[in-house]
Length: 350
Image (cartoon, rainbow, N blue to C red; front, top):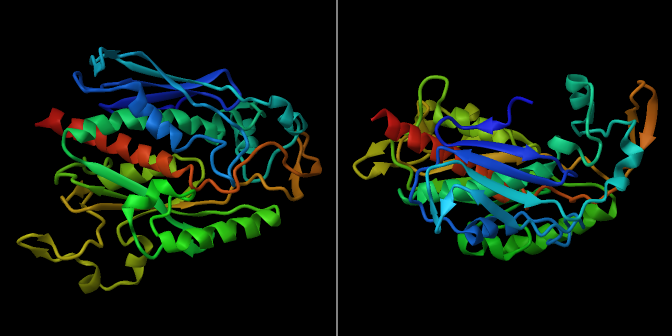
């Protein structure tokens, strides 16, 4: 299957399925002599681990990472880094009823159309479970960024229409929604309970801000930094839209409003989101991702079976009510992977 490798210099290949024995990532191109300990990768995996939040799936995976290669005595060696996470809480029998039918909103129909075969057990390769490998690889990418003091921060901007009004980064990982606004956490919880009672699901917005990115990252014209960031974030299954800076709001602005004046200290505003002509300008990079509602809902839905006959199904199994907040570290990981790759590409070109 093509399309499983991301990056040109810092290259990451992920593998594994939702109900297979394990998942993992192989990283090639990581510089040598970087400090890397399993617990640093584990810390990131804990942020997306299933079975933690009350409104998340009841699947309980320890997501214990093993570093199989590329690290010696706590430092990267420059050889490929192999990361492994075993699946421990698999209940494939929950999906037996879905063997012959397509779930609305999932990749069942399109995988069958492309390959003529699909893994019906939780979606196989198309399942959100695949992202555990991305988060593990993103933790390694952050070690590359740390050398240049590049620090991406991700959080839930909106969940089910409840939007954060304040951004307090100190509380992001200390509440069940990764919300940066303490006043909105209770409102998000109430919204979740309201929708859960109806057997439905929620979407929202995740935002990433990157500080410390130097000017000059990006490769014109087809590998613009914002273009590849959009690709990276859009590659996460539940993401249906990406904005850089002002994003779609720019369509309703005048040029005099959208242009960011240059002043001796930098830029007077940041509607460009830290990227001009596809190249970082040294300002804060701002990325916002639109996350769709989880398609597995506890309501009857219309579909068809493998023979094209109409069917009515109610999706069972264990599912999140929303991809948020567990998708927050996934989107953060994809931004980290993109920036690490562009940073190393820039150094290779000088």
